[in-house]
Image 1 (tube, each protein chain N blue to C red):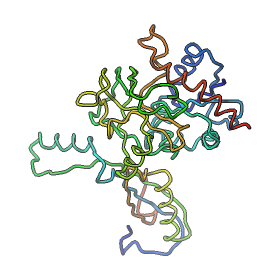
Image 2: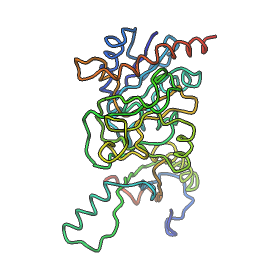
Image 3: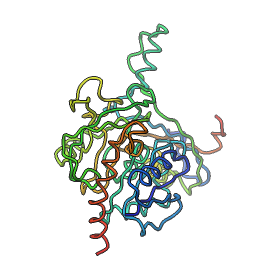
Image 4: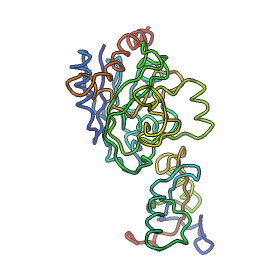
Length: 101
Length: 237
């Protein structure tokens, strides 16, 4: 998931922001508990909450396409478990993202 | 029969497994550090419970890449008996040696109690000689034990007889209040297609003597003695 203004073929450092969540068919009791908490606070308009993970990682790659391919492999092999989880990510040039952002 | 107990950084059921084999089964057993790769001297492998690598990312996700796991996979592919207990079960699913995955308990609570499980199949070395339908009383201690598999996988493992243990009441019936974590089909343990790799959430190694609350777990550990020896003989012939 790369936005138009981030399209670039320049090599160098990249930041990947990775979002991992349970597949829609997998029951998410954590999300349900958070939703109930929001309801107790009066946010009745909230219909669904799904909890997940957010990871940032920095990597070097010759171009955007290879950075995307490497991050995709990392997601498939370790960062997400394809049996229960889905993921998506976005890449940006490292200079846009400092650690802790 | 020589047992290995695989020890990862963060394993905490390793001593229980060593004691279960040594005092319960009275068989030789050694701890095997996760960096070791030679398992050729063993006839059966236990992957104990705990929080390998702090359960970081997902329970079992990082342990799966430990050097010893390649040897465990080879041992399993040769037909050697492997039992994953609790976190060991999670490690085996992450490694793809068992189908499915284990999720956060539906209660969101860590559940530490005694449960009943029904043995569904005696066609594994870990249940050989235990008549299907037998109810065992075993302790559990886990926060992420909710077994999940997609509908196709679930249908396949049910049809293949790969569901080995199911949560039940003391009379062997499934139903409300018997499933401690919300697992699909009340599944407590499964096997691979071949049957030699079994994983379960309850702790048989913590039930090897009446003095510690029960000895039903010893039946699972004992089952492998005969079945495991013949598998080991086949593997070496």
